[in-house]
Image 1 (tube, helix red, strand yellow):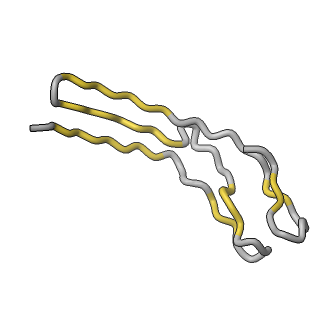
Image 2: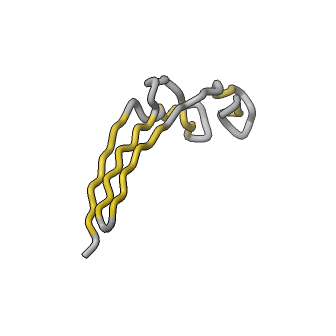
Image 3: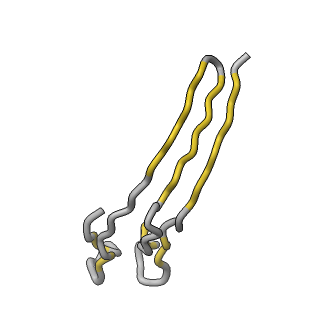
Length: 72
């Protein structure tokens, strides 16, 4: 994500960032297993602002999620 304006008046900019995500999955017949990694390198970044200069929303930290499913 590149630099972008933080509000409609263009009074400040949110800095750009590069976030890396990864996924591994295994599927065999009806069995599915998946592991998802978000923000692999734990980059600190701002995902958005409130449109003014009161709040900046930090992006999600390093996160791992896993799922296992079986279809009958």
